[in-house]
Image (cartoon, rainbow, N blue to C red; front, side):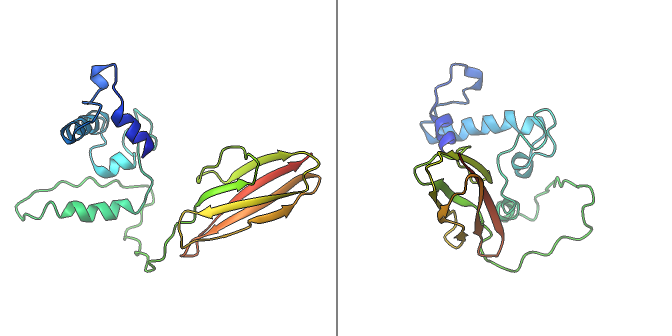
Amino acid sequence: MVQGLIYASTQPTNEKTAYKRPWTTRYKSIMGGAEYVAKKYVKVGQNTLYFQKFNVVNKTNGLYRHQYMTNIQAAEAEAVKMSKAYTSEDAELAFYIPVYTEMPETPCAKPISNANPNNYLATLEIKNRELTPVFSPDVDSYDLTVPKKVKKVRINATAVAGTSTVTGTGKVKLSRGENVFTVTCKAENGAEKTYTIHIVRE
């Protein structure tokens, strides 16, 4: 979201890549955004919402790279919304459906549970210390080196979803050399994601 706001408010020096930026009015944002999507996505083969968000057709920019979403639930949710815009019985629609290797003959059953599947951490830290790399919910392994005099550290973590539970936090003792600790985030539906912290005590 932050990067999107930065892009929208930027005054570019090249008029060809301006797309009516900065987007200071609704008209500029709608028309400029449409121009951007047409040039960057539709004209290179990513001409559906699915292909724009999950690039399986545009090899020029690199398969799976020129895309902007990884939410697998979006395909169904947005299809339901889009279908409401095409309620006329006279409308002729063309569907572009990607077919994958070893794709099953019949659709997979829709999950019955409505439990939240989010098992990501929102924060992970060692109090008063800096982990390497900087925390990101998608990164599950971290490193830290502390002086010999440090015998204990405190691991703090919070989940993205309020329905998830986090284990492995709190104050932990450090032995000489390498110490390995794990923090697990368990989603409401039972799915678990484990983050590993390697701490070396000199």
